[in-house]
Image 1 (spheres, rainbow, N blue to C red):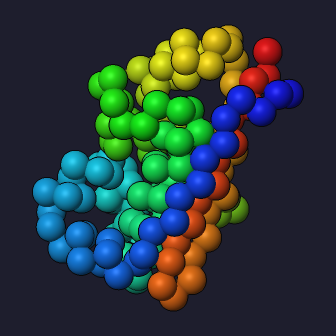
Image 2: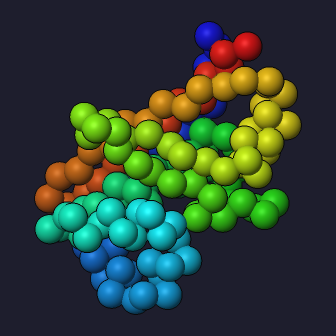
Length: 129
């Protein structure tokens, strides 16, 4: 497998704590599923901060940023049964990656972490064809 993109982003939790008080912000950035899952978490700021950082690091890893019709809600961050985060992307984003990176198949890897003041995400995109 060849690495075809990496991205990293860090978010100040205090900034997101303030932003998530605005329902329009939450609904513009996060999917219904992410919002629903957030209800299980006591510290909503850290939950949303990690996901915001993951979406930003994803956009950096694929090299497009949020343009050409790509928006934050096209990218979901879900956790598996063991708690490991992963990307759930729609077909529009899959096509965008295949076109921009000139690959037929790819894998996405995500690592997220937080501390009291900051949340960070690291993304790797690998060609698996």
